[in-house]
Length: 494
Image (spheres, helix red, strand yellow):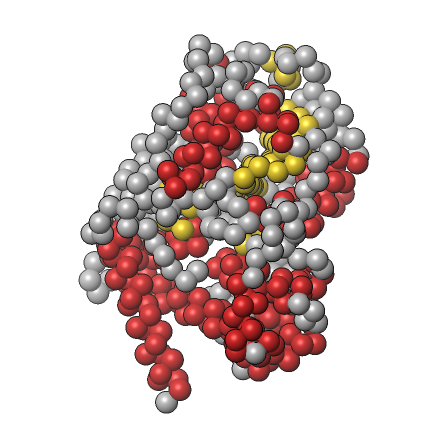
């Protein structure tokens, strides 16, 4: 009886979501209400490729897409676009390090084999991109080792690192799923905020850069730097979202402008295309980091509609008075462009919560597939498996909270948010331990389950120890699910 009830609930839940997605894809909802709410931002000017801004430094860049799977097409498209932007800006391949799983361009789902686009009418951004770290070489260890210039710590890949000196300028761009205190990777474990910030501190202590800029696209991306990134490191960071909200995919099926009809996935991310499309058309000799921040902030907030996020800035804010040219160069074709303090690039009228972009892909694939086809069956299976995983993770976390704190207090603990300026958690090792304990009993959090990292951090802040978590998790989860999202296949996130 219990199994029958669970199956019925799952199907009913999936059907309700399908109806919601169907309305969004068909555009049948009234204006302003069409967003997804599920339970889940020439060498001109160069001498030898170096800035002519009075310094002798070299520009370095690290670009990373932290996901895989065709439903995450947009992350690798973002990175490829960023590479083309830097290349036109005058950076040399030897100074650009690219991380991408590289399973998109020639994926059987890709309607244009070998081509990746980042906007509905965009050109191919995949051609010529150096793939320094691909597949299972896209790891936390390799990413942090590249930033530090530590070749001996690398495992696989091209071996290229940021071999910078004291006069150099570094640009880092990261795009992927995230959650409070963590960023995703196509391989486990997650990248934890404390590890990233400690790496940036070590890089500063080594004296191997003059200034560093970090652009971060992920849900709750503000939590990566909130209360953790100090001033005085010559680091300026902006994030797609604050510490409490999702970031958004754009150029998705059902949006306007929408991708070409043969595409069943989002082509980009709202914050990411905002800064890149701005950079594509401006003379970056004259546009400052602050000016771009303001334009990107306005576009990503989407005029404060329900499908936008708050772009944030952290670290040495005064550094934003510097021009973008110092970090990403500029396209000589834009040399005569006069900067106008207005955003001519308008946002889409809709956007998709990052965490729901996979469901949108599965649903659009299902909707378009011929009746009775294996493709339709596969899409249905993928959709139901994803929904089953979500329901399992959500309900498991809720039950564990009730077991640890009681029915009433448990829900309060799950929702608690620390004041601005405080880090997510006091003891990051506690957080890692609770994540691993949960996954050992209940399965992998995966990209959707990252949303619950704040709840697990709150457990730590409330004094919960691993032994308490073990007891509650074993009661809440009788077995580890065997689906594609399971830790039996994916490993552990900590």
